[in-house]
Structures are given as C-alpha cells and as structure tokens.
Length: 286
Image (cartoon, one colour):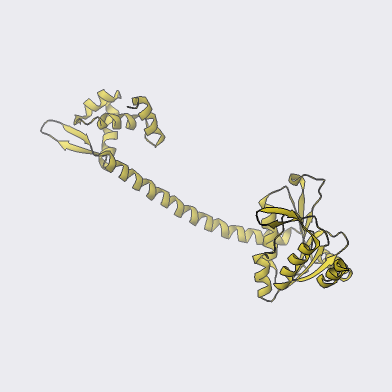
C-alpha cells in the first residue's frame, strides 16, 4: 500500500491543499467520524477542519450525518468522487476554452485593425532567422494579390509537382501568375521511398505540372533572385545565400509602388531573356 505522505503529495498535485489532502485520507479509512476526531487523526488545527468539511459536503465528497449529540462525517464511494472531479475539470476546461476563443477573437479583430494601419506606415520590413513567421508573411502577401503575381525562383531542397493552394485559388478567380525558374538541377525529387538528385526531365515535368494548372512559365539560364512581385505594389525578396547559416538568412518586404515598378521592369527583362519549356526540351534532346 502507498505511503500516506506519498498519497497526500499525489492529492496535492491534483489541486488539494495540505489540509484537504489529509482530511480526505482520514475519511477514506472508512469510519464515520466527528469533526474533532478527524482533526485529531489528520493532525491539523481544529478551527480549520470545519471549512474543509463544509466544502467536502457541498461538493458531495462526504455525507454529513446529524445525531442527537454531534455531526458525523462519512466519505462516499471514491468512484463517485472521481466522477464528480472529472466533470468539474471538464466544465472548468470548457469554460476556459470558451473564454480563450472569445478573447482571441477580440485580439484578432484588434490585430486586423492594427496591421492595416502599420502596413500603410511601414514600407520596408526585414524578417531575419529560419522560422515560420517568414513563411506566413510570404503567404499573407500571396493572399493579398488581386490581379497579378510575378515571381522569380530557384528550386531548392525537395521539389514536388503539387501547386500551392493559395496560388491555385488565385488563378481560378482570374488572377495571372507568371514565373521564371532558374535552369538548375540543385534540388531533389521523390522516387518511391527514396530521394534522388534531379535530372533535366524532372525540371521539365515539375514545370509542366505547374503550367497545366494555369501558371505562365519561362526558364532562365541566368542566375535570378528569389523575388515575388504582387500587383506591382509589393515586393518580397528572399536573401538566400548558401554560405550564410539558415538562422542568419533574411527576407525583405517592400510596400512601395515605385520600387515595385523597378522590380517589375527587372522581371520583364529576365522574362524576355528566358526560354519556354518547349525550347528547353529541344535543347536537351539535341
């Protein structure tokens, strides 16, 4: 059988204080006892016992029995107490969840208003480090697009034929997506359960899958920056350098139409200098 001190510590971990844990343990021994007897057995001050017993009776942990001489207290089945505590915890948890959702619903509204104000005031934003915040910022920019997204990209890491859901929805609603991809095989593809180095046909296959979904594509022999231009108003640039650790890399957002137009002119230069997928096919098959 567990040591009494160990049981008391376990009850305290569940939210009982010292006095409540000791009274519970005495009552669990099964006898019907008076308040003074419980205080003596639990070795606690008699003046403190009445508040504990009153609480236990209110919560239904023990029965209060009236006699012609004194009030007696008797514990109820521990299984019933467990059920009562579980229901209390679930109700308390649900109440906290409701409050949490309501509070953060309000905070979300405040955030929308605040972010709307700041976006008009801040025209350059730097995000440093390897974290999800940088990705979420990029996705927010994509979601803000109304008419046109122009991007220049270099495939890195693992590449699949799956298209981003945000850009798919954008094109379905009439948006134009134009992309220039660097002719590079510095990425990997999945072949069954293993990863394999990309081959020219893999680059073609991935780009054709994107093109099939409505993306307009060109392939560039020149090194190009990782850059996305949204509606010729906002520019997202990924400062990617393999010599710099991931935690030190950065992204920059420019919310300035004049600068965006400069970058759009740069995009058009690369676009006109690039080749189509069909032209690249002919090159590698010669």
